[in-house]
Image 1 (cartoon, rainbow, N blue to C red):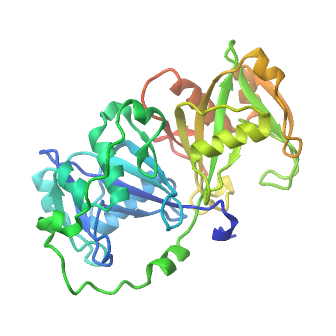
Image 2 (cartoon, rainbow, N blue to C red; image 1 turned 90 degrees about the horizontal axis):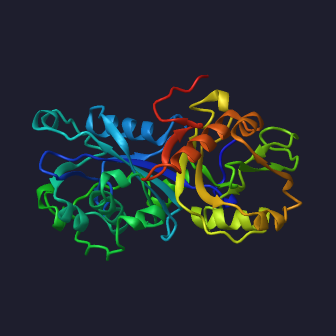
Image 3 (cartoon, rainbow, N blue to C red; image 1 turned 30 degrees about the horizontal axis):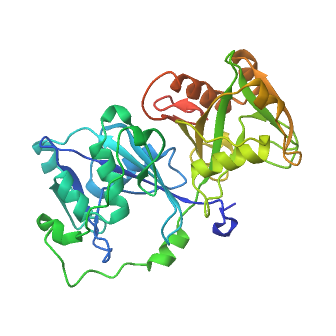
Length: 370
């Protein structure tokens, strides 16, 4: 079944790569089909057969530039809703620095890349369109240890605000700010589809926002869903508080706040983003059985008090029970991916930095089976 853009919960997903060189510059490309915003970062849109955004990035670079990069850590995740295009979850990855020999081996696909150049961070900030400029500039300005950064509409939120001040968007110059790309050209080729039609054809993902609450003894708060005809049939199952993000009207933090209020009756501000878990679609991971990929944001809810627990007001149309569970009990009650992301989120509480990157509840690099 295809995702339906009218349902309000679907969004686009994309992945790009930040290639630094030995002088601290970053690689940008020229998009021959984009007359309005022709300067971009290498990368592109998610496809259902991609196991994760990391795999999207690798595939896109191989298609666009003719080589397979060595990717480093996730630099940022950016949820964009503030513009007229459909909402999008964009991932940027760091790549190993490219030396002169590797740069000479780049073989750009002329249909995808009309040219490429190295720009200083300041030059890139002006040449890239505003949303992408803020996203890239944030990654270049923040200490690497702060990553992955959490951004919304390319503005810092959550722990990212501890490392980056909110600064004005650089003045946009486009190609005039990247003279090494050749300057404006009058005869840009016509794109095969107009932008609205192209976006309407792109596959969508869904997203969820969940929150980890623990008590003073370290037990995890789980809720049990009311039986419904969902992906697991009519069997009520346990999970962390939270649910689907209404992608066309809210961002992940707002969704986490709303879900906790609706499910538990609490007004709680989401804390640090602890984990990002990508659940692949059936096209990439048949054993998962999901019609489309799902991106799960897991936030820190902090330590609950006896008073908070006494005020729990379960959403009766959604939930039938709640329970505080020690790790062994939580592992027994949760599905394998759900326990994996919960355990990784709890571990992330104990260290500084951004969220841990997961695929189906497993840390990146651990192969999926099936």
